[in-house]
Amino acid sequence: MSEHFDAIVLGAGGAGLMCAATAGQRGRRVLVIDHADAPGKKILISGGGRCNFTNLGVAPDRYLSRNPHFMKSALGRYTAKDFLALVDRYAIAWHEKTLGQLFCDGSARQIVAMLLDQCDAGAVTLRVSAPITDVVHSDGRYRVTHGGRVAEAPALVIATGGPSIPKMGASGFAYDLARRFGLKVVEPRPALVPLTLPGEEALFRDLSGVSAPVIARCGKAAFAEAALFTHRGLSGPAILQISSYWYPGQPIGIDFLPGHGADWLVAMKREKPRMSLRQLLGGVLPDRLAAALAGRLTLEGGLADQKDRALADAGRQLSDWRFVPNGSEGFAKAEVTVGGIDTAGLSSKTMEARKVPGLYGVGEAVDVTGWLGGYNFQWAWASGWAAGQAL
Ligand code: FDA
Image 1 (cartoon, helix red, strand yellow):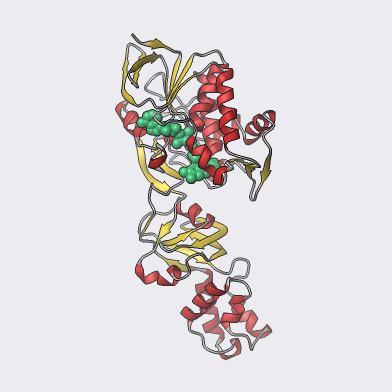
Image 2 (tube, helix red, strand yellow):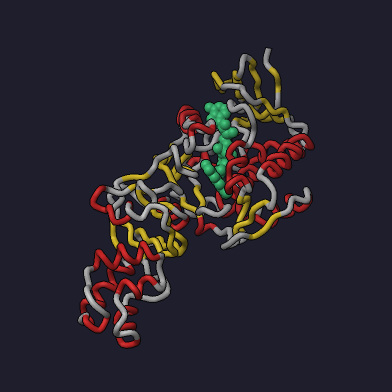
């Protein structure tokens, strides 16, 4: 015997819970199924346990997708302010950390509790520890076998996220299911992920633990934030951001002199002729990094001893230090996935599959990926809300 619902949501992450709560509060009978033992596990670990739940600067150009316009409708109809109003209604204290990033003052648990309360308000049925063993579509109904039960509904929402951090319950389930229903999947790859370096870049490895403000560039993308040297390569916000734009084989350029420019060394020769390059760099960069870079540039003596051309060359190198990563730390360490269910097959207004009535895709499962800084949760809330309005 199967149970009947108006909609079944697969995945109890941010997108699935928002979708279920929205549809439930519109009077729909909604079932949410998750194979993990608790809902919202990625929310709990996000933002160092404080959940960077949205960003005041949300705009379509801060998202990657094969269709750069797809996210406009949902983000425009459910905004960062809308989510913030919900957070305020629950009296969850928050603060802006930097670059418009909003975090809980207390704990990410408050966000999960809020979403679960919203689901309760919509009389949503939530089942966790329920592995999905079969999904069948016939006679306009979706039948989902899960944890020994069968539920059916005329609408099915894929909200099972992407494969980043498999130990948190992440899987490629969304893609397999979407393909089974004839939807295309844009090749997924790890994003917001540390990059690894080949042996010849030992300069960076020796600096493990050092952090510096830089501009990281790849193709047309550039991020002015901190980079962190690790024993395997590079991490920190600037590198995580640029990793989403990086393809294997492409060079990354690091500007170690943000705000100074390539001509800075020549200008400083006039101002401080006796100073060595190492001393000069030590004034604007962490000491170990200044020593390593000056050592690589091998300009002995004071600035006055250098030819202008040599200083100009060194300035250019310091403001565009090129290297080719040999990979990334992969899905095991990636905060998100670039790629996913191809938006060409979905309505940007409702998130429903154009050719499969009643099938929806939301959140990270879809080929929409935000920058670091609360953009990905805002997409989860907005896309979940858009589908929840349409169910
Ligand atoms: P999400 O992955 O959250 O949920 C999918 C759900 O589906 C999970 O509950 C999973 O168990 C379930 N599922 C998967 N496969 C299944 C299957 N086969 N059967 C049944 N259920 C299945 N973003 C941001 O904006 N601010 C931040 O601070 C952070 N911080 C952060 C830290 C870390 C460490 C990570 C890994 C990620 C972030 N992110 C983030 C990204 C953010 O967590 C991510 O974009 C959203 O959680 C995506 O929400 P979804 O609901 O789409 O997927």
